[in-house]
Image 1 (cartoon, helix red, strand yellow):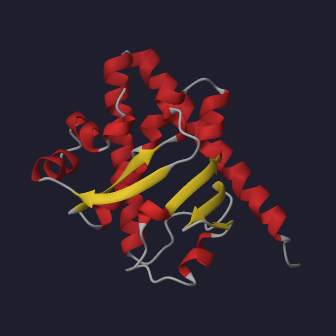
Image 2: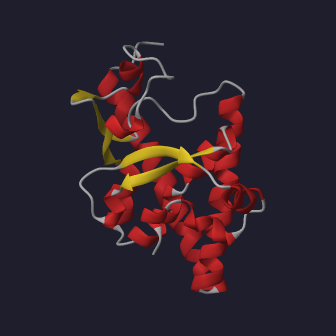
Image 3: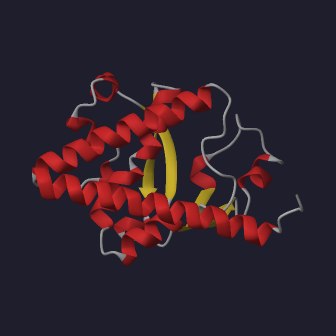
Length: 186
């Protein structure tokens, strides 16, 4: 097999992410249509918690949890621009990585949610960050300080300690867990 040019590889990842976004919207719309807004959104959130747990479990087993490129158009870390997240970690250890210095630009999923005027359903997908992080380390959570779907220019995440109440709500897939990331609340 021949080498695939980076642009083509990025394009293929983007196509897959568009399908993930459309699948999320389709399942979400169906749940809301069938069960009503409140119950539908509760089940969407429970599904995202389960999804994050599965991703986090794989991450703990040594698998990558997100493609290195193609999900977002670019990353800016400490004022330097990157396309591939591995390039950021090539000069800084994961232990020294500071989320507050990372800007995430051009999220493909957010673009699809916006094109479909479904920012609120898209924000439910964004809970994947907290769910995944709490699976890999229940004492911390990755939450949004900026979010394109909330009107910001780019997304930004920070890692903060969880409370016992948040850990319990997460373990029990309780709808109250939604409070874990205040920026995403409706």
